[in-house]
Length: 370
Ligand SMILES: Cc1ncc(COP(=O)(O)O)c(C=O)c1O
Image 1: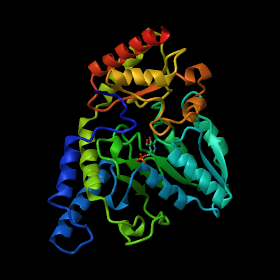
Image 2 (image 1 turned 90 degrees about the vertical axis):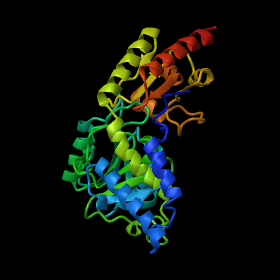
Image 3 (image 1 turned 45 degrees about the vertical axis):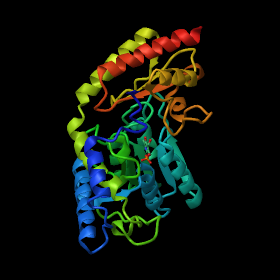
Image 4 (image 1 turned 120 degrees about the horizontal axis):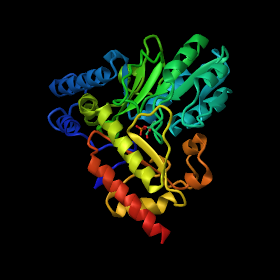
């Protein structure tokens, strides 16, 4: 199998699987229990928190484990929106549904006005953000790296604007985590969401970083785990795997190697007549391209039959009939929108994988043209 759908999910790394196994066998206790088994599990919890914090260059006390990126953003956005701070919420038209749908619900419940910055051409402009974010803005939310195009959004600039306006700022760093060098403190945000299964962990764990002095309301009530912010017995196998994966991903990831793969794939696809949607500032692990005159679904099936796994837009959008909101916002014309595929890399991706995809696309073009 040639797996090029790492923005959807990654293969768990051997270190993550070893940590998961340890947490499910030798250290299976409940980390809240006050006996040996519980204390062993508690040590794993502490180690995982330190590992995730180290990968974010932050203090372990700032990390709350969640079930994934979706829950982390929900917790943050539902907790940060404060009508006393203003009536406007600002985000972009290319956010992940975990942020867009949550903000729509928060805006409707709290009578906020939701303003979407345009990402035409790939990313929002800091100038438009500066025009929109004002003293009446309660909350700003922006992703670090777009999950369909690999575009890097200007979160640093927007964080400074939000701070100057007295607004809260949330960053969805699910796709940027492990790939771009950043710390939440450096981005001047109040909260930041990451997810384990995008960096070689397993599904079922994520984390919310919260700035000192920011107090969120819990959305789950119960035993008071995670300092009362996220009740429920910690899913230790997934959390231990997350810690190991976060530590390991930093060692395995090479930006230069990813850039070389991106450039090679872009060159080969362009030579075939495909259109590559390269954003102005790029995290080179996600490459979006269209095959003019073709539809994505039959190409996906033909590629899959050759053992090649890519996606049409995001995994969340798969199976939905509507066009991708991200690619529409990017400004793709309808004939390209229908035929867009996404290849996404991990530290395991090789040049042979890229060349197999190119061969596969060439074969699809011949087959479907017939
Ligand atoms: C940018 C972005 N945000 C949030 C999420 C949701 O993360 P999770 O699958 O851990 O809930 C994803 C997953 O695809 C994503 O790509």
